[in-house]
Every structure is written in C-alpha cells, then in structure tokens.
Image (cartoon, rainbow, N blue to C red; front, side, top):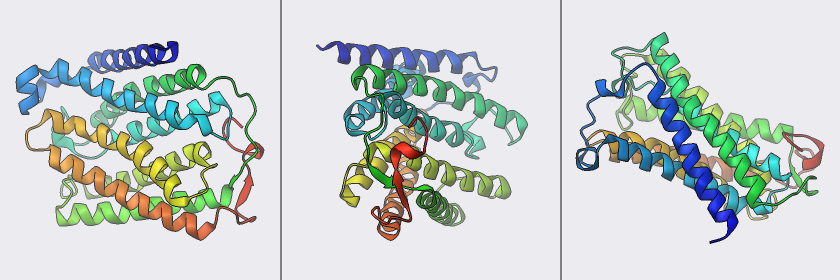
Length: 292
C-alpha cells in the first residue's frame, strides 16, 4: 500500500473523528430524536454515524485525488477550492427548514445556531481534509497552469442560473409535496433557505470549475463536476437522514437526485451559452481567483 493511500486513509479517519467529537459536544442531545430505521436498530446509532462520516469524507478525498491531478491552479489552491465547496454544502445545507428532523419543536434562533455548529463540525474537517490530501497526493505545483477559463461575468451568470433553477424546482417540489419540507409552517424561511442554497451550489460550482477547466468537452466536464463531485457528495450528505429515520431514504435520494439533475442541465445550458472560448467571458486562470 502506497504512502499516499495510507495518508488518505488516516486523514479520512481523523476528519471523521473530528466531526463526531464536534457533534457530540453540542448541547442539544440526539437522544431526544427517535432514530427508528432498520439499520440503526440493527447496528446502533454510533456505528451508523461513524460509517456515514467515513463514507462522506472518503468521497471527498477520492475526488481530490482523482480530479485534482489535472487542476489548472496550484496544489494548495486545488485542495482549498474542493474544501470550501464541500464546506458550503454542509454549512448551508444544514440550515434546511426541516424541523421534524432536528431536536427542536419549532424553527427559531436555537435551531439556526444548532444547525450552524452542526454544519461547522462538518465544514472544518472537510476543508482540512481536502487541503492536506491535495498537498500529499498531488505533489508540489506552486504556479497555476496557463489555461483559458471562465471569467467573472460568466461566473456570475452560472451562479445566478443555478440559484434560479434550483429555487424553481425546489419550490415546485415543496408546494406539490413531492419534496417534503416545512413550507406550510415556515413559508418565508423555507423560500429564503432555498434561494441561499441555490446560491451555495452555484458558488461551489464556480469554486471547483478551475480544477476541471482543461476538459474540452462540456458534457464530460459537467458530469465530473456536477454529478461525480458535488452530486455524489450532496446525496451522501442527505442520506444520513435516510439512515436514521424509517422510510425517509427514498425521499432523501429523490430530493438530492432532482437537485443534481437540474444543476447538471443548467450547467450544460449555461456553458453552451457563455461559450468557454468567448473572449468576453474568458480570462487566464492565473489572473484572478482564489489561490491563483
């Protein structure tokens, strides 16, 4: 077994342990929740929680290792971009207004604060994990590879488009009942979260785009970025609720699957529209952006 693989395994285990300790230290006890899924009844909550974090962070490490090699930015910037993208998913995703899956009876400041620290407990270890895995697995690359990629205007278009399409599809899902939410009890809060998470998805896309910018085929780029990177991770993140509560896994997979399908279509349309070789929307990656 190579030193890189050994390091990745150790890094994943440490990240999972970090997240578990932070979650366990929060004042609202999970004992107040009735975890009634078959897998919890079979192996217990601790085993499910550990397995979940190991799977979630393993995906993050694999993505950095597999796709980071062709990144157009420096090694540390590659890891930081992945780490920030995943951290955004966790921080904003944790604020989804589904109060019945929390230790609280109603939405309010206590709910927001608790979910924030829950998300932070996932965000900090994933950022450290991605940057450390990139540093060890990808080798030193101090300067960015000269590559023409999307400029600031195209980034703004992508974030706006993903925000809008996510907001529309989730609002339709909420109002029709296809996607379970508390929109009936907290309509304004639900709509605000929907817009914010759509923006978070768009920002995550823009953050990791330079890693994939050397890919010339829009479909291949979109599948690797949207489906294999953001999509699989978002599905794993949502699956935790499905592992805890009986009968919820189909809903978790449905909602995250719809989210990513819409994001993929949006990516294909927008990249085709802005044109990755349009001089007005393209700038060299070394000229601007995080870590360049």
